[in-house]
Image 1 (spheres, helix red, strand yellow):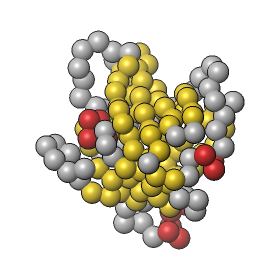
Image 2 (cartoon, helix red, strand yellow):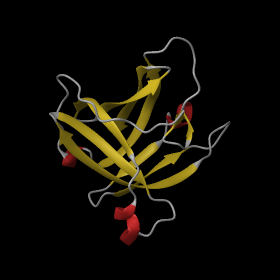
Image 3 (cartoon, one colour):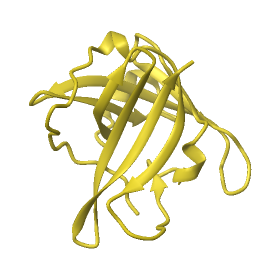
Image 4 (cartoon, rainbow, N blue to C red):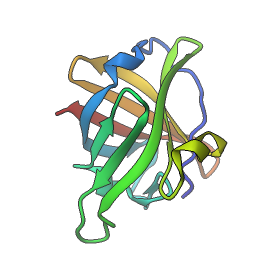
Amino acid sequence: MLFLASCSSSKNAPVAPRKDFKGNWTITSARVEGVEGKINVTAFDDAPLTCFEGSEWVLPNNGYGSYTINAGGDCPGGARQILWSQRVNGGTTLFNFKKQDGVKKSDSKHIAEGYSLEVTSFADNSFEARSPVQFEGKTIYIIYNFQKR
């Protein structure tokens, strides 16, 4: 399954400033909503969705961060370099990132494809973000829960 999210709006979505995303985060859960039964999802064109549970995300002020997946089972462990940003679109906060592995920082702005997650809740030490994805003619959501470390 391709995981490139659209940027639709959510009602009553929180507006969270960029400074609130800075820091170190762990994904405590990753799940799919809106479909019956179990489906195999490859998140961020990288690894099975379950591999992202326990992944560590480093989001520094300069935008050049990373996420690290723990190795084991079907999970290809290791760090991935990203360029992250936050923006508000129609009152919805979006957490965006592009993969940067093997790309020089000076060339990073030339990468057009990336990922956009709608932030559906935000607190001092946690946030939930979702990605709407088309699946068999309907919209389902991949939900990620982040906890600050």
